[in-house]
Amino acid sequence: MKKQSLLIILLFCAQFPIVAQYLPYVYLLSIDPENNNEVCLYFKGSSGPGVYEYRIWGYQITSAQNPIPQYITIGNPIPHTTSGLYPPWRYEISDVSSHPIGLCVSAQATSASWRSFDETNLTHLLDSTMYLALPQYNRCNYALHLQWNDYNRWRDSIDYYRVTVKSGTNTWRSQPIAPVQKNMNFEYPDLPPNGTYRVYVTAFNHQNRFDSVNSNSMEITIQNDVPPSYIYAEYATINAGNQVEMAFRIAPTVLDQYVLSRSTSATGPFEVIDQFSASDERFFYTDSDIDPSARPYYYSLRVLNRCDSVAQTSINTASTLFLSVTLTGQTPTLSWTAYQNWPEDVSEYTIERSVNHATFENIGSTSATTFPDESIGELAGTRVNHSIQYRIRARRNVQSDFTDSQAESLSNTATITLPVHIRFFDAFIPGDSENNGFEPLFDFLPSYYDFKILNRNGSVVYQSREPENTRWDGRVGNGGYAPEGVYRYTLIFHDEFNHRQVLQGSLTVIRQD
Image 1 (spheres, rainbow, N blue to C red):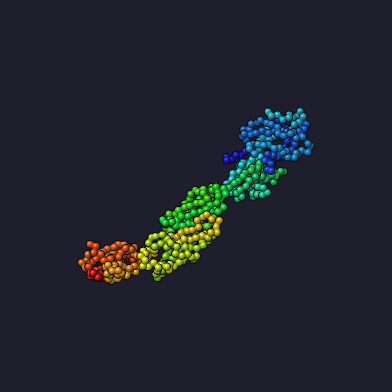
Image 2: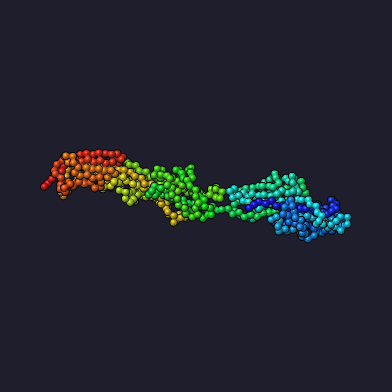
């Protein structure tokens, strides 16, 4: 709203010829802050002969420099008394808080030695009450910005101003404010952010008979944008594409600007990774700019107010589970970071394993953050690939205010490559009911595999690049069994360290026909 500096002009009215000692003397013009429409006028009566009453005259002022004198009498005439000093004249003027009102006092007399009030013969001795414009509220620092004009009668002699703010039974008053300029500007700080307040300004001059004068009062209702009562991090989980998916639950609010921050430590520091607008009470986000299989990550969500200041921060952080696997002897040992900051805590961690790149299966659960896979030996010799995948599933306790929230978080997928442990027999009998084929025997199948059998001439009689389907039954290209004799084999494979290994040896084909 455009600020205005409006004046209420007090005029001392006389007529020509003027007899100075006969003029009513005005001490001050003030406004009762408890009733914004009531003007208080303090004046001393005239000593002129024949004075029998006083009249208050007023007009609307469109400009302090160019008033339009269209006078009307205000209120009833005031009878003359011999005491001289009159109690404050009070009258309700409905427009006093919207534009300047000029006032003057005339003495009505019967004496012929000086003329009574005449609108056509008027002397203006301008004075002004303090006019307080409608306060402006600064939502950023919870301060009221106030502007008012000084009190002209006391110009250059005002000791100080004081701002009074009222709300219900509460009253706040500022420290004394030095009068440094004609139009005062002041910010009343740290006002409680929600409520209806009435504000007025008082000027003090302790050398004057009446030592204070009030401005009009202004009422302002402040309703700050209320931040959400909570922001709850439901989960962070790692999807099949090695991206972090997360969700936050947000209490109802009109604020819609959010900042998402990320850290590699639960205690920070957090770095802003995105700023966006959102209006739903549940917020989803996918972070694809990091590698969650390298370290854990932690996420915090904050909502901003209209001044881009943080209004609320999530009560907890969403964190990822970081899983690593090491080999202890022949046993894979899993270790992972705990899921941080679920207020309800973790009920258990479920260990899941995938072999031959198949669906993950549950192989156990624990409340700890380590787990030895002692069941791995059961897979030896079952044609299982030597690359084993693991992941951890954290489950949140169900005692939660958000029963419909996802209560799980998946870790990254960690892979361990087990030793293949190859064994060979040295002979077989094609067509036999028992010992009727030749193949390498593995505890776990290697990821790369090239197996060849050659006759004594060096010709390849059998070849396979599929370790799960590598058995030679002794048949050769024409469909018959290979001749009896000694053959050579060559096996090229990659070990658990992805190193290329070459094994060579001989085998004997025995014929019974």
